[in-house]
Image 1 (cartoon, rainbow, N blue to C red):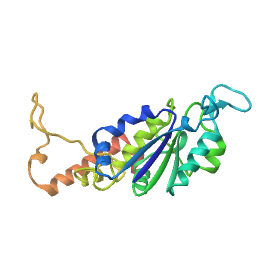
Image 2: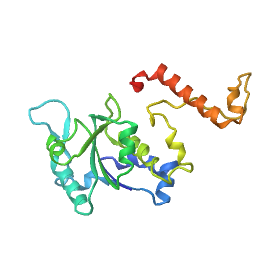
Image 3: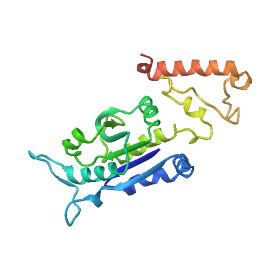
Image 4: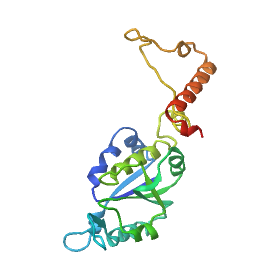
Length: 224
């Protein structure tokens, strides 16, 4: 998979891809993440990428020309399955969307900033708009990093145990069950005896029941 991320702050989003699972995915050749500095497509001497909004009002708007030029240059080199714009008013990211995007070959991600981007970009270039929650960030970089992490870990071969991703929260509309590790007793606190039984079928049944119970209490909306 190839992911091209367009941003005015490439240094802000660089770190997540240089560590842990995402770094190993890149080293294995399973994913290639490229950070494209939008300012290199800026207009004029000062490489301008934003301007005042028509009609007035507070805040700046990302201009159409630099972004359109960047997108067109990238599209001339390859075909993209999706061109994604990270925006608070987009479709809320969930596991189903991540599963679908993990099957794609080429993704382009545009990080918004200021008051957002010129609407004409959204009308004519963007194929998918995604939000990571009902709140506003200073820019789309953190949101893009979160989305990419959720996608990349699903690519076969990225995780050492590929079945791990299949048992994550939300994969089957259930929250993950509680988990425990050594020591079996700490400060007088033990763990459920079933986990020490060695009976795989009973353990899986217990985990499923715990998932259902936890989902009922914390996210009953998922069971609908």
